[in-house]
Length: 67
Image 1: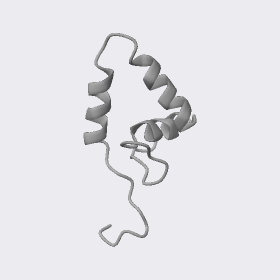
Image 2: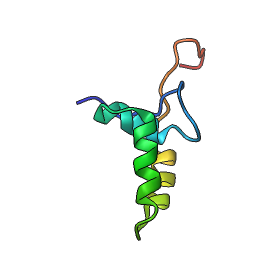
Image 3: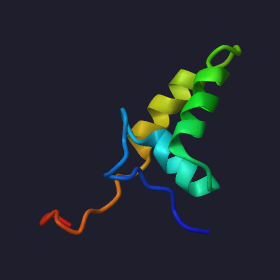
Image 4: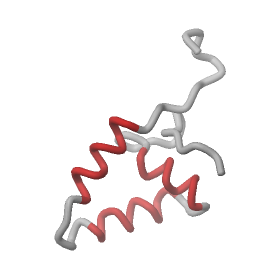
């Protein structure tokens, strides 16, 4: 099982949905629709998204000299 990291390409806002989509083998758009649909249900979905945005590491880029 590989570690989850927010990708440097294909992000819309924070890359959380793209990272989860890559991990679960689905498209990023599908994961975004699932997230938006889940926001209609009661619960802390938005807070969970913000927490994942903060705590998931960003993917290392080969062209970034800092890595």
